[in-house]
Image (cartoon, rainbow, N blue to C red):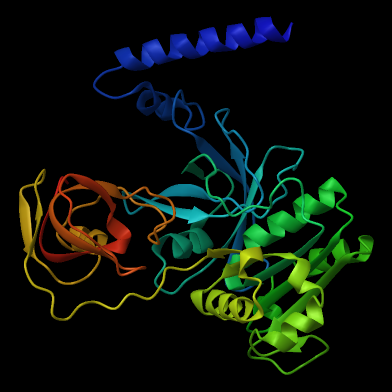
Length: 367
């Protein structure tokens, strides 16, 4: 029975692909979305079916994806595309829901950032019925299988979402090992999911949830920033634990440095949830040529993505932090510097990530 259903489904997909190929000058999805934006042949989309705001700076969206959705592993991210002032912008967000959520929907909690165009838009404008584009899940930040005997989850700010997904998934699996959850926020009012986290800990004897506040006096929780005292308090067994940390670069740096000193860095899995601060080279020289567009501009020292946008171009991009690989383009000639590692690359006709690459002298791109 399942074989017949599978064959029929594949036949329908082949027929739709054929129709799609004939639907010039646009693909079939462009015509279908005029009738119903949730009907598509190729493009994965999602409808916002619920919106609520747990804290002053966050908005939680529940998405119903179209049939192409293949699911995700806890800790992975998706790319969400929205149209703002007639221009589609894409950003990466990690689902906060368990991978076993029984209605197949995806929950995202997005923190509003002062300079975040998409996060500002979603915080202010997201309503049920909004349709967004969606990518399949990606990323290697996830708990290995079989599960470790003990797990430590550390997050800061908006980095709570992937580790919350991990905790919810472990809860649904009936995980019986020790798991500690440590979250950093400015104040108690800045913590989403606080009540649910307490409930998960209450029904799982081996689960411990702790909050640490960096701008609030001690009220029974921890205060201050990450260090050895916090680590020993929440997980005295941390040397044997698999540790997953997600948050701003400062938190990641502190955790990585301490684990290196303790000699257990191999047990650490990390995800940076904010782009690293990048210093612009004030002494940059040369020009940047966008060959396909016929545009040449002076090298400002900024990332190639920023320079392309400043030149009036709109190359495809997503996370802006070197994770999603949406902004890969071919460098035809010249040298570039990786803004995260400092490494240079001078080989011609090579793919590079625009968001984390800056030109060193003259550079020509196939954009």
